[in-house]
Amino acid sequence: MHWSPYIDLPWSLSDLEGILDDALRVLEEIGVECAHEGLASRLAGWDGASLAGDRVRFARRQVRDYLEGRRISPAEASDDGDAAFSLEGCWAGLNYCDPETQQIRAATSAEAAQMARLWDARGLSGIVPLLPGDVPPALVTIAAECIGVSNSRYLGGMLTVTDPEEVRFLIDMNLAAGRRYRLAEQVGISPLRLNVEGLETALCFVADPDVDVEVSGFIPMAGATCPLDPRSAVVQAVAETLALEIVCAALGLTSTEGLEGEGLELRVEPFDFRYASIVFGSPEWCLYRALTLQMSAYLRGRRERSGRFRSVTKRPNAQAACERTGSVLWQALLGVRHFGGVGQLSVDEVFSPQQAVLDREILGYVERVIAGLDLGSGEVDAVALIREGVEAGGFMGVADTAGRFRSFYHFPDIFRHWNLNTWRGEGEPSILDEAWARAREEMATSTFQLTDDQQKEVDIIYDKARRYLRV
Image (tube, rainbow, N blue to C red; front, side):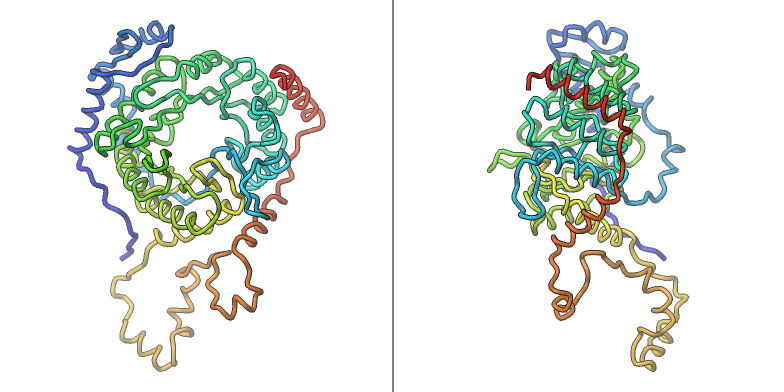
């Protein structure tokens, strides 16, 4: 018999259906605010949408039909299997935790390029992990894109940009590097409002063959931009995400939280009333996460496998270890296997390469817990095994131990199980120093570079963008 630990989820099927029904009522009776001038005509082809002033309302029956058409069938969901654990990227950090001094500061462009190399060594795609802080604020998105395409195979796109002309520079830069630009606009604003500026920028490029256009959704914060009551908070999260899905479908856009992606990702984030900020990795975050994961799986027909490392601390310290291990282990017990937010601290304000290495150690710990134990089925004669060990004076040499201790125990790379004297004998190594050494070793394996002609063209486009932005 094999035992793997897990957490029972709180809601019954009737509870989940009741939440969905209330969310459909919200869409029909309250709707979503959007002052976009062309929205009414663009939604005209979607049966069930109506516009009254600046609010779009959606008929319950049509939304339910839409949802049913998007749900994964039981046959498709049955191939879920035991997904392997993996580390992904993170959002671009505004600040850098200097590995040498632990100072939190703006990064140089060279440091941002180093961190892109770290991500390239891991074969990651998506947004760059660290923003350059030595360029004018207006130039940050362009500069970060130049760093991404010049120092990695797959990084780039998704950073904030709403000026269509600036978007065109980003598209051209990617074309020069043999890439395809990924434009992402934050469109959802809780409670129940769509960002007109972001929506308009996305629509400018929806038919452009040289760019992938996506919109991202809402971030409801409990007690601030959504109800504190957990069930009501999830009702609002469902209503907002379904509304964004329908608007995207009607406008020909792709939602990053869409039903056709990795999962209909719902969010309810805790809000700290003492410090007036969002809270990642707290006990409340874990509890809300369980609710949204269960509801997401119900809406899509398949469990959500993507999660995040979460913490509000500013450095790779004891608080980071607590919040990140706690939140990742909790999610893994709920079925999550792929973890982003790697190296990301202070919600998403700080990037630490040391933490990016330590997150791999944390995930190894979590993976071993989830692997569970083989409890056997009585085929091992316990009395005989104990007798063998007693006669031998211990169990290290018995066949049962020798044959499976390597697969039974987890042997961390940095979180080693030394006793005090061994640690002293090794020079009392610092975990943070070792993590930085591992990060430097990883970065050294990234040898990517554009061709001379590609780099020259990227630099020309960068200079044109800089002149356009007058910086």
